[in-house]
Structures are given as structure tokens and as C-alpha cells.
Image (cartoon, rainbow, N blue to C red; front, side):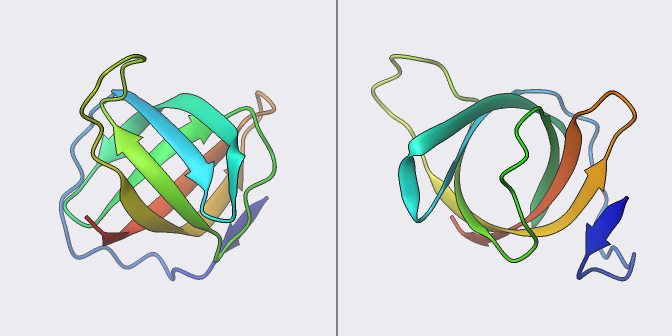
Length: 100
């Protein structure tokens, strides 16, 4: 099942880049998801998560290249645009970067 506000139009090239990412809801700093990106562009990214609390329109805080204990963490704000339920039970999450 795919839930989306995006109509499949991409204006930027996406690089197939796998890197650690920390994701948390803007409204709930306690719920942290540590996962990996699958691809990244200048304006967005796609990651796979085993958590199912995401919804289209949700605002999330993102830390790309996350390493536990790193004293310098650059956090971005993004909006969930699309959710794909995968056969392996996980979800693919597409996020547009709003603020860097």
C-alpha cells in the first residue's frame, strides 16, 4: 500500500546513498527511530523503518550521518510525503526537507 501527497514528479536526481539517520517526530522528542537512508537528493530523502507511527504530512526532525555521542549534530526539519508498506513488513518513508 502506498500513501502519498506526491504525484510521482521528481525534479532532482536522487543519489543511492545509504547512511545512518536519526528520525523523531517534531511533536514527540522521546520517540526516536534509528535507521538508514536508501537515497538522498538536495530536497529530500528516502529511508526504511520498522516503525509504523509515520503518516503523510507528519513533520520530523532528521539527523543525517548520525553517530551516537557525536557532539555536533545538524538537525533538519522535514515533512513525510509518501509511505510505502514493504513486503518485509517495514515501511519506506519519503521525506521532503523543509529547513536545514
